[in-house]
Image 1 (cartoon, helix red, strand yellow):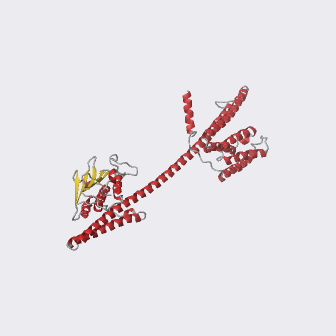
Image 2: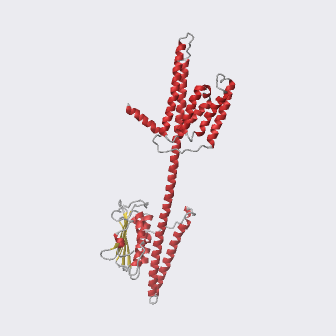
Image 3: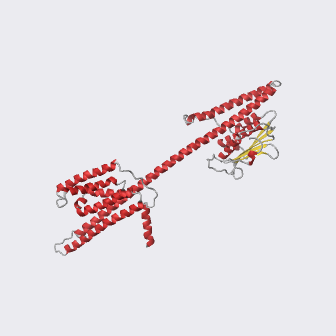
Length: 474
């Protein structure tokens, strides 16, 4: 029994929000509060005089100014119904008792009943301290029904006296006086219960609206943060692309220019071919940079359907990339190994582009920083259940004296691998030379800032490794 009572009390307290951390903001007394109180006061006085004219108040002994004062003070309570909700509800209950005892005909007017109803409802709806509100409202309800119980007891005694008279008549299931008192009890249950219920519903509606507004603000803040993060990531991506494009093509142009200068006198044909290579590399570099800069310039004002649709370089451009790296003193070989025929055609465009850029950066490092005479580029493609796309660039050279890099090339390789949850191994080989090896999961979609690499425990894609600080290509 005790457990059932405590459980019911707990549910009731939870419904009233006794332990709810949300506090409803308390507004200052505003114009609408004053207008509401003034309007009800004027209407109440007008209604009172109409009732007086009908003759209903002819038995009231209180002077007219006292009746007016009762109406005006009741209406004036509504000025503070939102600013001091619990105090207003308690004052309205006291007003009801005092006026009901001294001038019951005035207390029973519709205007005064509206005043008491709104005051109690506002006390429940606007109270910040829900526990104190529940105590005060409970006291008000208990006092009111104790008053009614007293009236009911008096009514029953009067009916017992009338029942002893021979002239007593019954018109229904109950005698007239108990029926009247019982009807009063039912009306007051609906009256007070309705005020409390509507007030609590208003409070819960305000709380839910505040939470929705807070959630909307949080969503907006998160959207702004995601937008800023997306802009940052896009800038980093464009920076990587620019580095790859400029570093590769400028390196090729430098090598071809040196070759043309050496053979210009004794082999004009080779010099002509080297100059043609310079022309092609410079044209491709300018075209690529124009596209990237156009992306920066036109992102916000060019519709998506009008954006540049030029495909990003992929596996099909690898032979051209390798050919540009070949020189009379350096042999570069390309080998694409497919686990199943046609795997290269099934590789996603984003992953194929990353493979191409990885090979490009590795070859650029060879051109700028290595004395290698032989370079091997191997691309392994496995589209099975645990498939992967692996790039391995191996050379047999040593670091060229007097050259050093910024490290942005290797950083770009690692960032690309991290975006696809791949792994990276970069560094000199024990047998001589240098190796760049990157393995991408076949179905590795671009990862977010907090994504983890599938094999990061063995070779972190985005963090420094011991091979990064070894003597070799930057």
